[in-house]
Image 1 (cartoon, rainbow, N blue to C red):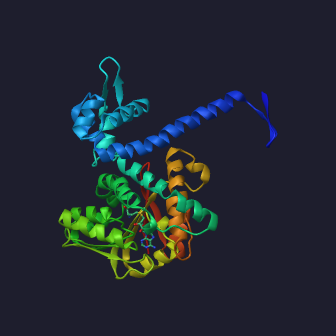
Image 2 (cartoon, rainbow, N blue to C red):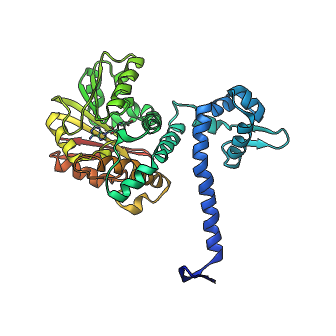
Image 3 (cartoon, rainbow, N blue to C red):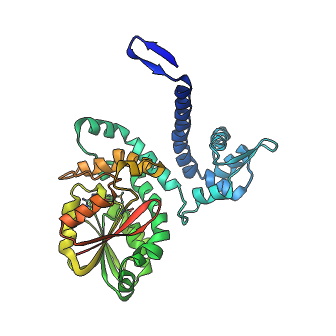
Length: 363
Ligand SMILES: C[S@@+](CC[C@H](N)C(=O)[O-])C[C@H]1O[C@@H](n2cnc3c(N)ncnc32)[C@H](O)[C@@H]1O
């Protein structure tokens, strides 16, 4: 044990081995944090796609294929190799994207697809100055106040999870919902963002009709474009509306994907759903995976979600009336409280993945 003396701070007994272990862990985190930017760069410049197509590649070949400068591809590849994103062969000077990393970095249909997660993280950090100011003042930062990497990154992050789970796993886990959607019912998707979930449901259930609501007008415009591209505009509408006052009545299914905790007044939103849902209707709430207690969430997924909560979701809620700020890791008990306070009587966890909890709520 060494006593470190610093005239500025009180004396502390410090274990130098533990101190250096912490310093090296922090260096690893700096590398990982900076690599977050390099993943966005590699995604945007097409480096991962080119590596997946080319196989073992030199920096010059990667630069030629992507129309970029070889000084940048060389340093980028070395950082990717140091972080085990690519393999490096010293004998040939070539770098290879292993098949698993190729799926994770390039296959948008895979649940393991990662660039969207990096893009929303990068967008979130770009807005850190506003978050620092808001943390001082107690104000919020609205969803619409963020840069486009947050909005597009959110869509690219969540869509693969919805694509792989929503129609195949989550909707069938709800009592009688898939059959009703096949016969043809009315669905409201509240807090729909760019409409990924709304459009996936519309593609799977052509006899049903869907309306997506979000208070962020720019997201609603993108959602309408996405619906037209997907060829489902005949059965999907989108409208800029708040969750506590959206129009309509007798919805058979109301869905909320990764947004209840972002709302300023989740109880007000739940009350509006109670008013507009059919008596035998279902409210499906998809929320980030979380347990009820802090200690349940002290793991890598919880860590990432608490970071998003600090910089994205909590400020988004605080920017709105009421500002309940449930947090990204609200957990089932608090979500149940919201539903019960609004007059719903039945609540259960219908499905879970490493990243999501799916709740079934009924009048
Ligand atoms: C994390 S994003 C999720 C978007 C989309 N559901 C998805 O899964 O890709 C949260 C969304 O909630 C929306 N939102 C937040 N508060 C809202 C409110 N009070 N009324 C309607 N939408 C709201 C935001 O505009 C944003 O689109």
